[in-house]
Image (cartoon, rainbow, N blue to C red; front, side, top):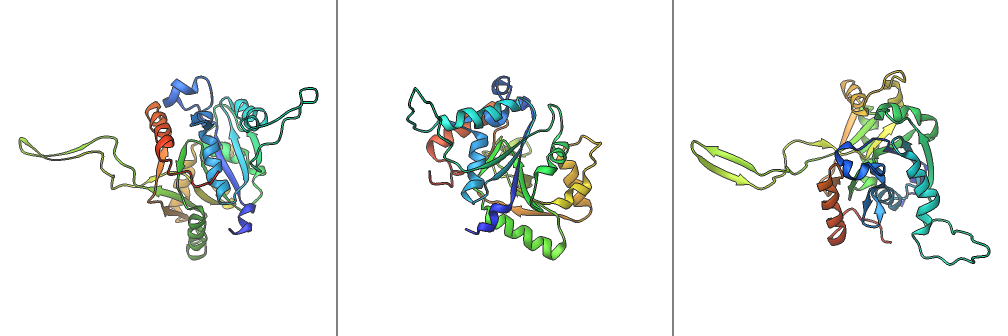
Length: 263
C-alpha cells in the first residue's frame, strides 16, 4: 500500500436530515444509524481506512453533536476493556483515525457544507462521499483513474458511477398480452454513488453566498469539461429508506460484500 495515500483528506457529508428514513432519524443523525453493531458512518470510514486513508473531515449538521459524542465517548467502549474503579481510564479507540468535526449548519446544503470545511482540507487532491452508502470499491483504482484523467484532460473532479438494479419488475407488452417480465433488472443508466476524488480547484465553482447541492457544482464542472468518471461494477447500496436499512442489515449478517477490511 502506498504510504502517500495517508496525505489525502476524506470529506464525509454527515449533515442532512434523512427525512426518507424518519423512523430512525427522529432520534439520531442518519450516519449513526446502525448497520450491525456499528453506525453506517463507521463502515464507510473502515472502507477508506482499509486503503490507508485515515484523515477524515465530517461535515456536521442535524444532530451533529451525537456524532461527536459517539466518537469521543462511545466508540472506545465497544471494545473489550479492563479498568481500575478507583482510577478509571478509558482506553483509546483501536482505530488510529484523525477526525475533524466541522459544524456546517443545520439546514445547509452539501456545496455550502463543503465550502465551510475548506480550511480543514489540507491536501490539494482530496476525496469525498456521502454518509449513507457502502461499496466494495477499489479506491486505489479510483485514484489512479483520476490522476490519468487529470493529466490527459485537465479534469478536477472524478465521480464514481454504477448501474443500479430497478426496485420493480419490468413488463413488456405485446398488444393484449404480456410479452416478457423481468424481475428487478439492472438499469441501463448510470448514477452517481459518491466516492469522489476532487481537486481544490472545485472551490472556484462554489459561491460561498449560495446554498446549493454539490450536484449543481458538479454540473458546472461538467459544463466546462472537467468532470471525469470511474465505473464501479461491484456492490453498492445506500441507506435511503427503512427498507434499505433492513436489507443492509440482513446483508451484513449473510454476506457483507463491502467489508473489505479484515478485523
